Image (cartoon, rainbow, N blue to C red; front, side, top):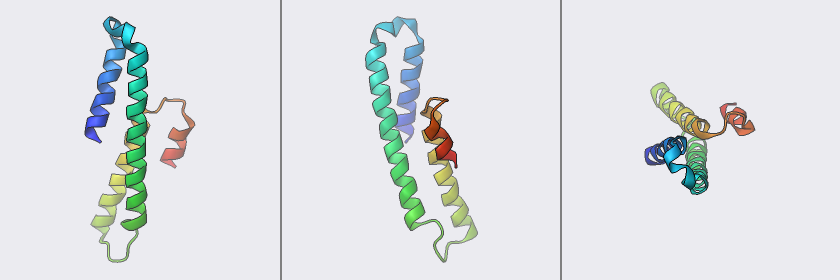
Length: 94
């Protein structure tokens, strides 16, 4: 996830620089592709964790807390790059 997040942040900084104004369209398109990929990967991982790991009999409290935190981190990664007024952001944190 880290390379995707770093790439999106880099594109955001390029978009803020007027020197790269002529590339705005291409940068926004690529940024959206990266965001979509990030969301897909985070959704897949959280689904697998919830389906196969979280809530299993035999998990210690520490194990359960670790994986719950991991799921929360993946949701945070998604929310980090969604527009502030996006409805999915509200759904993601529920």
